[in-house]
Amino acid sequence: MSEVHQGRRRLLAALTVGGGLVAVGGGPALVTNARGLSGYEGAIIATWRHSDSTDLPLSSARRELVRYATLAANSHNTQPWQFRLSDRSVLVLSDPGRRLPAVDPDEHHVFASLGCAAENMVQAARAFGLRAAPSYDPAARGIRVDLEAAPPERTDLFDAIPYRQSTRALYDGRSVPPEHLRLLETAGNGDGVRMLLFTERQQREDILSYLVAGNSAQMDDVAFVEELESWIRFSYGEALSTRDGLFSKSSGSPVLPGWIGRLVFSQVFTRDAENRKYESQLRSSAGVAVFVSDKNEPAYWAEAGRSCQRFALQATALQLRHAFINQPVEVPAVRGQFATYLGIGGRRPDLVMRFGYGPELPKSLRRPVEHVILGA
Ligand SMILES: Cc1cc2nc3c(=O)[nH]c(=O)nc-3n(C[C@H](O)[C@H](O)[C@H](O)COP(=O)(O)O)c2cc1C
Image (cartoon, rainbow, N blue to C red):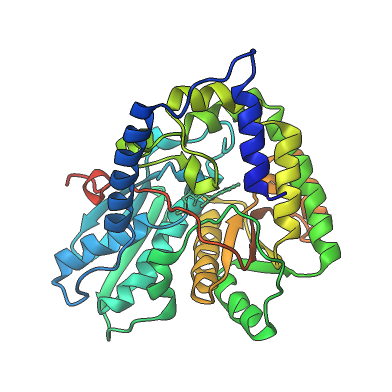
């Protein structure tokens, strides 16, 4: 049975808990859903697009670079960033109101997310006739992206930006040709960041054991589950009003009125069900990439983010899907064991991604650029 069908069966079972079926599909609910769907689709088209022109004056180009930055991967889609614009640079800063203290107590993922955003700026800048040079600014605790004029160049990675998505679905198990693995390797290795690629069946099984250990620990952690639930957007209305968070539809789950979604969440979202889902998802993947930076510091966490965003764009350009499976690096006790398995000495494994060939899922939304530019 497919994973989506299993999910729907669990959902139906949950809806009948307590003796009676909760009414989900009444007339008014269907009308609201249809209206929500068209609003959501319109917002997606407006969000995930290339600029009409790349021949723009610097002030407009800078704003477009920020828009491309916001299309980057980021933890729980909190969009934990703010951008301070000055004449020839953009400072990418964290937004303290969008932290995830349970899953990310040391803000590793915040800085990785800022790195993902900076990498999109680097890739986009070239198309706008600019060279973007990011460097970590310890005083600002952010990434300073300096801009200078350069010959315009449109690359495959730039073209891929509006098509990239985290695809939390079953893939088809096909392996990736060696020449494409080499391109992924080139993209994923970075300044102070090494990417380890695992494509053997036994390696996937080994990594699965750390994934299940990390996931089990997280599912038993009330603070983790509550934090995750608070960022899930169950309905079109919730997704459209916040334009952030994890839209259930983007993970292949049904769209429900928020109150029903929250009611059934605890029934459907169980440790065993999630572990089974990850088992089948990882076994359906062509491989796993692990990003390991040289030092356990914010500047390097950001570089790891840059590397994984580049990897994701290269994968997208090759028609490959990808999804983060960070459980092995998010639970400190499991992370130590995982580091030993990887043989990386005292270094910290930063991020884990699976990849392979699979379907496209509905995309997640982003807040408008004006909301993330300081002083706009
Ligand atoms: C640092 C970081 C950690 C992430 N961890 C996970 C994860 O463990 N599991 C997961 O499914 N997605 C993870 N994601 C993916 C985000 O949830 C995703 O990027 C976000 O929801 C936006 O969706 P999009 O990538 O499709 O644009 C992570 C992303 C980043 C940058």
